Image (tube, rainbow, N blue to C red):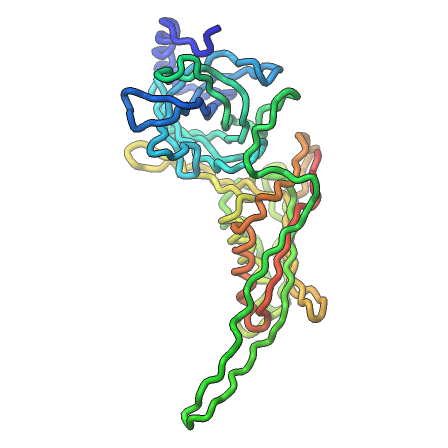
Length: 395
């Protein structure tokens, strides 16, 4: 059975697409495929075959090992100089009808999670959500110079939905190295304390001992929900909602209204010294984690024509709840606290979301350590822990 149909009828359909490409297809899908080894004789520097498949409305078979219908359009993607194309910097291709698509992908994203976006300049700019969805055969490969029967497998699926395609019961595990664990561990990073002070000499030539800084220990504990929401604005706009009183250290802003939900914000903290406040340090920690960690996904800029950019609504995919608490280990007292939590306007439906502990990596912990180190020398030793709460969130 032919897995990819190139016929006179298909060529004729391209002309039809040129006439109607201004129409937005609500159910369109862009499949980012891995197609095995290829050798394009026209492009000798392309080493491995990848391609984009476009469907006006794909119909996934009930079995993971059955093929959907042939794509309406497809184009091969360069794999130049050994670089995998599905990466954050983006891969761009032009479809047979002239539509230009660019996919921005976090290639380490585990299956079932939002991995990025696909954008196009058609109709002034459109954007699709891209989901990690590995391991389903979708079509034959365009590149047949090495293997005439080369098959393309799904790597990422881009659509207008707020969830990935269904995963059939017979679909094997094709997850990345970011895999879930059977338990709910916490992960700890330690910062290094300052070096031992050394004596210095005064003008009189006598050594003057340098005072040892206060060796306070600060324990920072963070939790977040494994389920995500879409914040329909910039990350900076979200952080600006953490309005706090510099006298009390408490948050004084009201709830944040999103599309279909309300986010309640809390924060409190003690004054460290004349220039430092724990509340501000924890707000900085959340801001920097949101900019760097895989738990938070900022939307890309839609590329435009002739080097311009298409203005689009900003959004951030982020955990629906987050907390961070700082405790002075010498007194066991909480000296800083920050959180946000989501309350939905209506009934929430959808699959369960399990904790991906591999997201607790240096991009999560280092921004927190860097922020709370602003409390030095009152604190010069820091313990950072984090875990999901709950371990699995089900609607």
